[in-house]
Length: 447
Ligand code: NCD
Ligand code: ZN
Image (cartoon, rainbow, N blue to C red):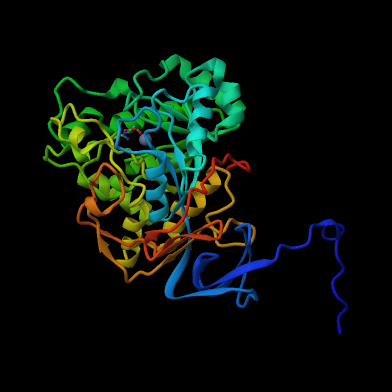
């Protein structure tokens, strides 16, 4: 009989392995495909190991359903502090995330006041404590040069707007962009950029519908902003481009090796001659032919990250004449369900969805989850692909009460495990307020 393998010095000094608290068994998405496995989970909520058979005190078999990693939505606006009352909060936003299968959200800094210094950041962190259903990573806005260093020690990432949008009046002057990106490169945090160049906007004629809105903030605005970024960003910058809308931007950013996201609304909805302002969003929805190019690139696996840009506004604000209505729509709860329905319809490969919604966004934010693998957090979903629903704003959990995806098909997770504890059962929230503020734990790989 072979002698037992010798233990290395590290193993002799390593703490004893954590005991298995329970085992989740079923067909799971592991190493790029669905396989029948058992997942050993610790009391602290870490995946200890994944294999054919795992001994453990408790075992939960998911039967005909499948086990997927939870998603990360790295682009949400939860409107706190300072948002209009009843539209959104950290509590209501993270509840929608939990129900939609999202275990971590990246919360944007265009709140009131904006997160431009450590005090505003600390205030937001206090608001997460004991109120959030899932984890929250807080973005800061890098518009105050004196606050940059202290923000970099406390924030999870930076968000830079190159154009005016909700809550952002003044983007940096063109000449200031290169020095700012240079400083951000030295600070090391991930940086997401809203890439529209306002010098390309054509806003003389008030927009009456989403076709006008598209013409007013045209594709050229995205292309020019991306070129400026590629010219001015130092190689050290952990750069990510938010809500890309064009097939040509996908090709350009892939060539440059830079992380970027597409949203479900730009992937699934096109502009049209319709004055319903619920479809008004920045950057605008594009023509059907352009939407199709983006969708096809996504299906080929060329879009690294799927993110919602969840940006709710009240139904009343959206009922204003189109030109006056604010831009933005809710989406964190429907991000994954919309795409799971496309997987079920045979239009989207599951490995491409899990890579873009679960694995890559978590890695860009330096978070150890998004894969079913030993050492990762046990953020896990149980999905029954037979449980299809029609989306209805009044049955979703966004306080604004509407969705631009009304009537579309969705598949919601039946169960959601957050650090190994069940927070969704039979599609209902059964968790608590255990979400916390997280910061990058390792260098994200965007380049
Ligand atoms: C966002 C909002 O309302 O906060 N609106 C939007 O149209 N996406 C701001 C933004 O991300 O541009
Ligand atoms: Zn946004």
